[in-house]
Image (cartoon, rainbow, N blue to C red; front, top):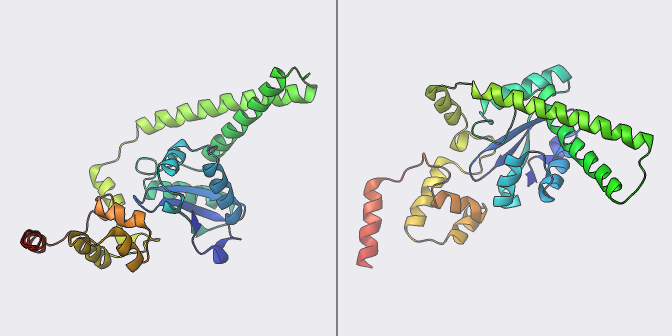
Length: 253
């Protein structure tokens, strides 16, 4: 997973995005620490399968690590502004319905996610101590009570968020606007444009190998495969007349 413009942005903080380059699904997050710390946390927990966000983790496991990128969306250091910006971008990119976010963002939901993961880890460690017959100290017992309390709070938070999302209605017109806002070359991380994708689709019709096209256009094999199987850049169409010409040519060959 590449950190885009790492040297320029690694020491900044604010809003960031993890994006799947194949389907352009996104996860919007916030950090008050340096972006580089947040990047390594996500990469480490995705690699070892401990990431708190199962939607993102499942997608990461189904694809290649190189199919994901990490980049800064907006630089910000004010706590209140960061919370509002996270909510804004999650809503703007529709990342709950068509991305990897599991809450509407902001500090409250953000803490629910991380406390829950931390609580599960604490409970697991404490249970391990108990199973090995180790006597629990008063400090350990207190940590255990706190972990249980935080876990109940996290579960209540998830239920409230789930109920709120059930009542959330988004019109078809709004959905279409959100999809079009970041389609194709409009994406801030697009490495191709519509003209190049059209050329790729034509060459695929002519029988050019995907590996050759990946090398020619300086993209990964997965990007070409996604275009070929119509998983991305579906708005780019090949002229029907050309398509028929290619079919006739193949038959004559």
